[in-house]
Structure formats: structure tokens, C-alpha cells
Image (cartoon, rainbow, N blue to C red; front, side, top):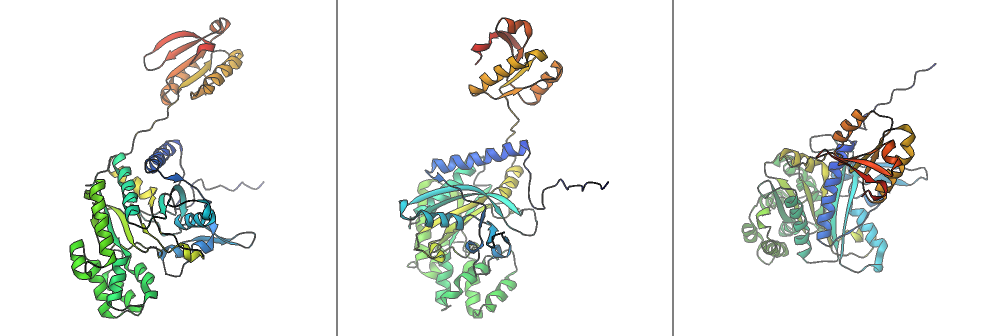
Length: 425
């Protein structure tokens, strides 16, 4: 007889299981995402993890398009496990059409898939919290989104000395390209290359930029401006009439009013790696420099037209769970979330299993969490109660049940008393 195939019990490389103790932590984090989103008056939406490949295929040479989990389904359609969420969101906005009034403030928490090389900060799947605003052209939208990120950090005990948020604008790069008369069609390609600053050497970046057809003078001008860390210096180089400078000054002014100025800083090298960004871009980073960007986002006013419809001003961010877990662990901010059960119901005799079922059912209908235990010794039940942090042990005994009573043990105080079964709360 052939031996059965031994199945590898590990999840596929780069993916995760969530046993109960980790699921409790995940639920805790997602609950915080939801609470912050609702405090900002955002509504929750969702979409399928499986999407049309066409939503994610762009020609700007982005890293993300090389990392797709894509295939042909049994109906011959090209599909993909989504690598990010914004295109799905845009698709839903287009689908909703005129039935919704602007501005739209939507959030979602969903799983994303990218086939990439495994490193400390990279998995092949992660969960991502997205908040997006459609129909708000002014930088008030970016100011609101950044406040949401800061609110989450503050809720979880992270301070502005742990984490900062770098800000810039794609319009900075556009202004520099205009200074050197670089053709408009090269803009997104240049953004994707420049996003590799810090990952590749300056020489490699310069080589890639020159390969697009830029002059060495333009390349040097781009690198010099992108090294700026001061908004006043940027203003000296570009002039105060440039839209990028006006947008950033307004955003810094709003940050003062919101009370999160100490979280943010100007850094011209931030361009973000996705081709569709058009204006202000931002990313949160750990100040010790140990981790990749914690989250990032920006304005994407021209995404909808790439799907063949009229553009709507939009901006948003994506906040992945994996890197954030690393940060919370390092800062000692992960809560201890033991299993907690309200009641254990235990029949002391096999013939009392029916009454025990009735007691458990009644308590569950009243909203209590109840573990119904049978076929165990009482000593085991007490140990089990300790393990799962049960509040009460309800014993269904023969003599008590004949009088319509049950015995209740409060496990924290060891207090013990009888109660009428029908009066249990």
C-alpha cells in the first residue's frame, strides 16, 4: 500500500498563519484602524482580493508591476491577487458614478500580495489599512490623512521621537524638470527611478536617469534639489510662485493648527514609487532608521482617467501591518491579550448534560461567552478555567438541579453560592 504524501504544514513562503494568540493581536490592531477611521468620519468599504490584471499593469517601470501574483483563470481572463488597494478603490468610485456625492471618505483593511525577495521588512502578503478622500482638491485632504496616521500612533503609545513623517511633492520634481526643459512624458519614469534613492547608490541613480535621455546637467539639478531638507531652501531654488512650494507651506501651516508639527518634516527626496502620484507625497519612518517606510501615500488626481473615465481629485495612504508589527515589538508596545471567557458550565454527572446545555444556551443568549465542558475531571476543569481566564464556573449538580438551582463559583475571589438556574445573569 502506497504511503500517503506528507504535507508540509508550513504556510507558503512569505505568508503567515494566525493562531488564536496572534489573531487576538491582529483584531486589536484592526480595531484601532477602524476606530481612528470612524473618528475621522470615514466609511468602510471592501473589494475582492482577486482583481483584473489590467487594473495594475502600468508602463512606468514600477517595481510593483514586476511582483504580481498574476495568472489566467479557467475562463481565459487575466487576473491578479491585488498588490495594493488604490486601483480597486478607484474602480469602485467609477462604478458608483453619480450615485455618490463628493467628497467621498472611504477606508478599508485588506490583504495585498507581492511576489518579492524576502527580507526583514518584506513579506509576500500583508494586510493594509487604506484611507482615501475623493473630491477634495485642496491640501486640507492631505492634512486630514496625516492627522489620522498621527492619531493611530498616539493611540498606541508611539511618539514623535519614535516616528516622523517626511513630506514633499511630486510638483517639486516637475518644477525641476521644467527648469531643464525635460519632456513631460518622462516625468513618471523619472519619479520611479528617483524613488530608489537610498536603495541604490547616487552613481547608479544618475546612470539610470541619463539612460532615459536626460542631460547630465538636468540629472545633477534633480539630485541637488532632491537632497534639500528645508522648505525655505526649496523656495530659494524654485521661487515662491511655484505651486509645489505654496502647497507645502499651506500643509505645514495646517499641521500647526492640527497640533502635529513635531511629527512632520520636509524632505525633497520623497517621491514614492507608484507612478500615479501627482502632488504632495508623504511617508512615515522610524527615526532610528532600522525599518522600511511604515506607511506612505499622497495625491493622485489623474488616476481615474487612466481607466478611461473623468478624473476626480484624490489622495490617500496605505499602512501595512508587517513593518508596524516590528516597530510595536521593538518599542514594547504590543499588549498582552490572553484568552478571556465569561463562564464555564460543567455538568457533574453525565445525566446532567441536557440541563448543562440549557444553562449554557440561556447565558449565551444573554451575550455572555460560555465554554460548555463535558467528560472531564473537576481538577482539569479548574486548571482549564485558569488557562482561559474564565470569570465564573457554573456547576450543574444533581441535588442542586432537582431544586432548580446551579452552583456558581467566582474564580477571582473563590466566592461560591447557589442561584436559581432561570435567574443566572
